[in-house]
Amino acid sequence: MNPLAASSSTASRARRSSSTVVALCFVIIVFDGYDLVVYGTTVPSLLAYQQWELTPGQVGTIGSYALVGMLLGALLSGWLAPRVGARAIVLTSLVSFSVLMGLTALAPNPEIFGLLRFLGGLGLGGVVPTVIALTVEYSPPARRQFNNALMYSGYSVGGVLAALAAIALLPDASFRVMYAIGLLPLVTIVPLAWRYLPESVAFLVGKGRADEAKALADRFGIATPPEKTPDARGSMASLVTGPRALPLLLLVIASFCGLLLVYGVNTWLPNIMRQAGYSLGSSLSFLLVLNIGAIAGALTASRVADRFGSKPVTVVSFLLAVLAILALGLGLPLYGAMIVVAVAGLGTVGTQILVNGYVATFFGARDRTSALGLSLGLGRVGAIFGPILGGWIASSTLGVEWNFYTFAVFAGIGCIAVSLVNNKRSATDAQDEPRVDHPTSAHQSTTPRVVTEPKEAHS
Image (cartoon, rainbow, N blue to C red):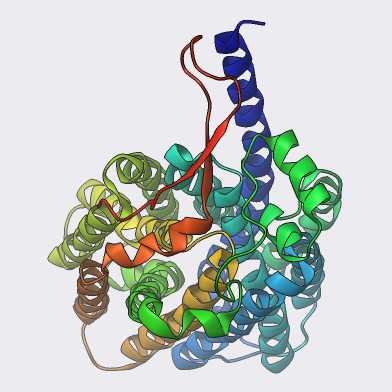
């Protein structure tokens, strides 16, 4: 057989296989994105719901309950990943948050509503770091950032769907119908994930199931990680000691700022824009534009990140967030504001996608889910603080422009944190990242050659 034809056939099968994983994880993240935006779309309805008599401060606090659950869920998934594997975490999380979203629609009072949002957050928190790690693991090294952004664009697609549903259903229908829609994963993605979602190859190797790992790696066209490493990788304790602790801390700070922007802006943008003089319909449309901008911006930026490295692209994205958020306080006409909000979509949701991809490519396969669990788990403190901060500003006598000033400051802090990350630290983690180099000439051996190289040390 012609070696070139064999190599091309293998590469084609690998692309199709990685596309299956990316597609599954994309649909999973769609529901996570829906849950992110659904609360923001229902904030005006909750404030107008006379039976509960909620204040802006109380609404902001309730909005943080799901994020506390996501914090704990992300940390728990990072701890469980080396023990039970990715499939168990994803399937359990999907079922739990879908059931709890349905129950939230039936909540009789604010207290039960908040409790169910917290419990649902546990499941959501477990999904995100796990599907990011799976997407990167099953992607070719040269497409990891792009595939991660493509998969994670489901986050913004879910937000777009939530905004469209709210525009169509609210304010005529009750806010409860928006949460009832959250039952859909039980009859859509759960059966597909059960059938087609693969286990982490790195997890199988770590459990001594080398034959299963090799068979799975061959099927998906990826390389099998080494069976043994010189240190105890895959545990959270190994990440917070030694030279990797400082880069991890800086990336946690970046994740804190990114998630504060994502959840603070998505929760309060409709209300902020109404205070700025726009109608309810226009205010909800800003959420739609924000998430469309996040999708287009993150996909474009991730292609650049695959070429030039994650660090410079993420720094620039945070800077765009600073400029776009400050520009929203200038009292722009409707169409001008829409354009700026689209740029803010890249700077907020899009930047967090880039931060997640940076973490996933900075650390090796054995540490990836644990590192993402820590960065997203501890970063969730920002996600909790964002809605509370927005609620405090809305309840205060400060002008609406202070929302923009405050969020811009945190975007600046995230920019500084990423700029201080030393990419050379990732070289040690890349040692468990084998890459299969297929022959490109008929005169070369047809046996794949396994090499290693750091992904981010060059940027």
